[in-house]
Amino acid sequence: MRRMIFWMTIMLGAGGCLSDDPLTADDRRTENDLYMVVDLSGGMSASNYPVSYLSGVPSGGWTDEHKTTKLVMRRIPAGTFTMGSPSGELSRSDDERQHRVTLTKDFYIGVFEVTQRQWELVMGNRPSYFSNTTYYQTRPVEQVTYSDIRGYSVGTHWPANDAVDAESFMGRLRAKTGLATLDLPTESQWEYACRAGTGTALNSGKNLTVIGNCPNVSEIGRYWYNGGSGESQDCAPNMGTAPAGSYLPNTWGLYDMHGNVDEWCLDWCETYPEVAQDPGGAPTGTSRVMRGGSFISLAWGCRSAGRSVCGQDCRCIDAGFRVVRTLR
Image 1 (cartoon, rainbow, N blue to C red):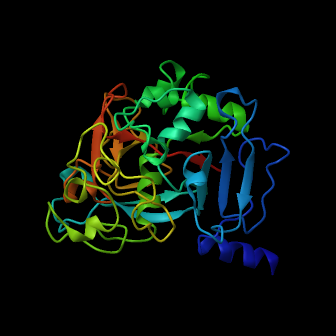
Image 2: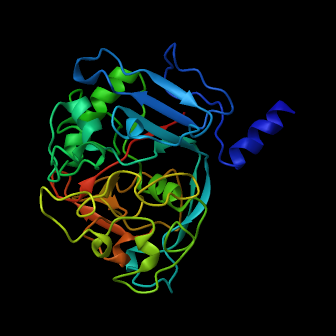
Image 3: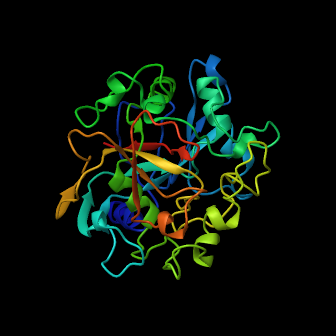
């Protein structure tokens, strides 16, 4: 009966008890642990970042603490889904061919995009354009490169291996949590988490009605037509990037998967295969995949299947990320 309850829980997306990389003494999970929380409050000087688990969203909801001094991640169950867009989807691209993808491992993914304060606590600097001291803390970090996140040496070797440089964001996060699989999401993990079971252009279960100013996008993310057109460095959060969690989440409780900042993925860009299991992208390439669109995107650029690419050392005003932990 206990085994049956466990697998029913997995099927419902409520998480379960599986081990991944070597666990620390504080890494205790039960079958109901849906969220993982990393405490970054000690900043750069901390010898470790404590990791704890929650069975659900706190009674008062997520607060600014969960977007600044704590990094919150939600467990996503392994599964199979259709990746890409149907031929009739408005403004689709030819590189979005639909294909079946199986992800064999559960993973945790950030409930929010990594914010400027979280980056500052780990790295000790503030690289973002929208850095007004009054508003910066809960806004997503941007103007960070793939190499800033994973490193300029071994961190560039994915998919040959999953190593990261010690002084990179992921290197420091791994060292201070003891969790060796913290990383960027693969492109397939990103789309699977974004869709949360939907097959529509948007993770709300809705499609685009127009390619530019679309009300269905306005309710789930920051893009050009609901504030994204403001690019003044000192602008208030109603313009430019939005504070994390400003719009409606998807079914799995993930925020800002559409718009706000384009999110780095691990993969080199590749032509999709017909079927795939735990894909990691092309073996080599010149551009890494980015997903989700951003505050300067039109509606078509924010679709669940939409793909963009950028050189791994590109430092863009709309480039950010979220963290994943794959369970082994």
